[in-house]
Length: 260
Image 1 (cartoon, one colour):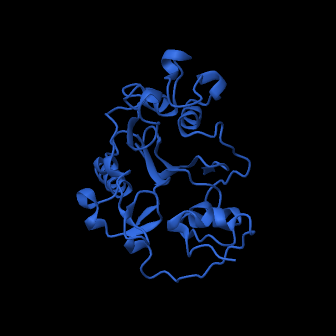
Image 2: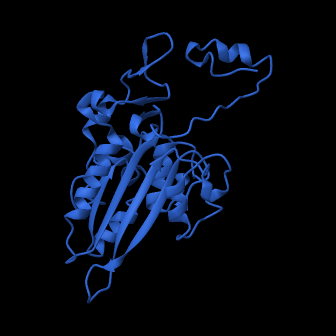
Image 3: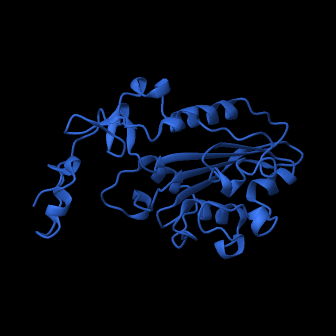
């Protein structure tokens, strides 16, 4: 298991116990990324955050304690991770260049698996979409089939969270009724369903490399109501200085959330 210690991505590589074939004994690979997930996790000793599922996985995995993001921006970090090259080599420091054109025709992790006979598939946000991956998520170099992106992601910047002022906002933390969201779902729910569909439809005749990239916990902080219904409510008090509180209070949607 690999987790970046900065605010970029969390990566888990899981090798299944079932070999792809008796002759080759190659393992299937499930590669999971989470956008902006830090090491504020139980398996890293955080006393407050409760992450039982990741902790359980970590208890049976190799946990890296000194793994750092190569760049404090999503696109360069993903490219660096997937090519095993620093941003100084890929020449990508933002979102506006494609390494194969501007730096070198470097082989990616999924591309290597593909060259070894693996069926490589991408679901969700793996490479950064757009110019940084040639508007194709590096297909067909890295992937055997065109990558899947959840259709509901187009609504991610829509104002769907109601604030204390009664108006809808885009970047509030809120639990939503999924059925009331555009398309009746959320991007990560769609990506999960697609990943499960691909796993269930796999064949043991050939090994596969499946990369699944989740958009959360990247903003906006919109979560299904079902995730908080049966959770114990905890009252938290944040102490701030007199010079800070007025600045925070000017943001209407934070009033009442911060107090001395």
